Image 1: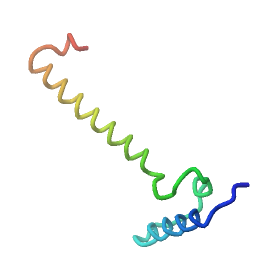
Image 2 (image 1 turned 180 degrees about the vertical axis):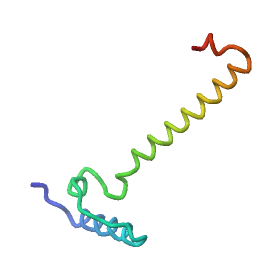
Image 3 (image 1 turned 90 degrees about the vertical axis):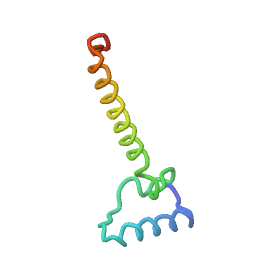
Length: 77
């Protein structure tokens, strides 16, 4: 069993209040009880993943468009 500290409890209350203010329903999940994960930052990896995927798609669209305009897309493929 993992013991929680006062800081963990404070973070948990702050996270719950942050979600309840805009009327988001809260329920205890498996990640809430893990000491190595902060409820305030649990969404960060997903956000970063989406940003990188979006940047890569935008970059590839630009590159393929450029290569098509200069008739080099076959060489690239």
